[in-house]
Length: 79
Image 1 (cartoon, rainbow, N blue to C red):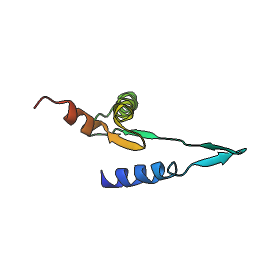
Image 2 (cartoon, helix red, strand yellow):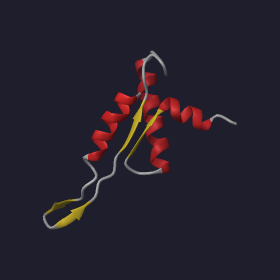
Image 3 (tube, helix red, strand yellow):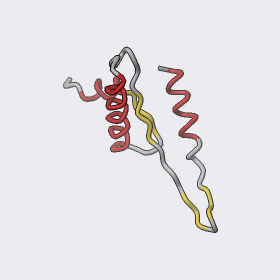
Image 4 (cartoon, rainbow, N blue to C red):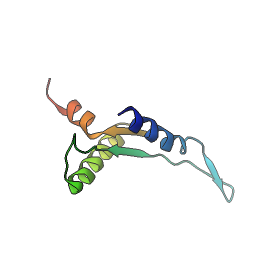
């Protein structure tokens, strides 16, 4: 998980700085959802669905972040 988190952080760092296009400043935010085989599933279609669910989960909480499907599942478990 550490390697995936590091790579996701590198990708999100690209969006840290504003950029200027024809004199207009822009800000872009990114969200990354990650699912891992075989821990989450071995089915490729489900991997995409799980990563998508993780991405939307983190988008609802914050900007410029990543979320693992497994972390999302643990957060949603009743205590």
